[in-house]
Length: 155
Image 1: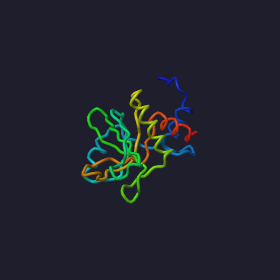
Image 2 (image 1 turned 90 degrees about the vertical axis):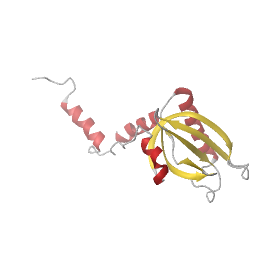
Image 3 (image 1 turned 90 degrees about the horizontal axis):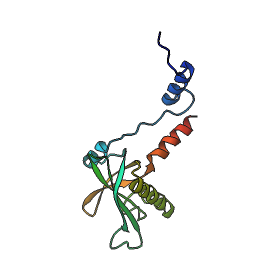
Image 4 (image 1 turned 120 degrees about the vertical axis):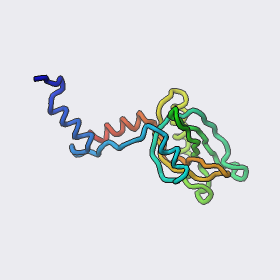
């Protein structure tokens, strides 16, 4: 009979943590592909996914809103790429407005992904901005941080 080097009690505990049976939240499912987000251009559904930032720039939101900041960046998984936007503009003009602190945090996550190649987990949906479909980011977070957060919550 082949015995596993990992005790059954430990295996069962870990399995229970992952599924949420040990009194913790189950690990949330995250897509490691941008395919669903890429094709949501048509449906404009709210999507959760992940990828690596390959391009970024900080500009004004528009010619009229010169005091409002727009962080534009592109996330890719190697097969698909989506153009994203985070901003502090008027919510009547464009949904998903962020505070300056939130925008700074987003910029840090985007910078880290570009510099170190770290995966970024995100949520949001497509909106039309200046006659282009742009993915408006609701919540970006470093994928490694998300993994550690899920581990912490499950303990």
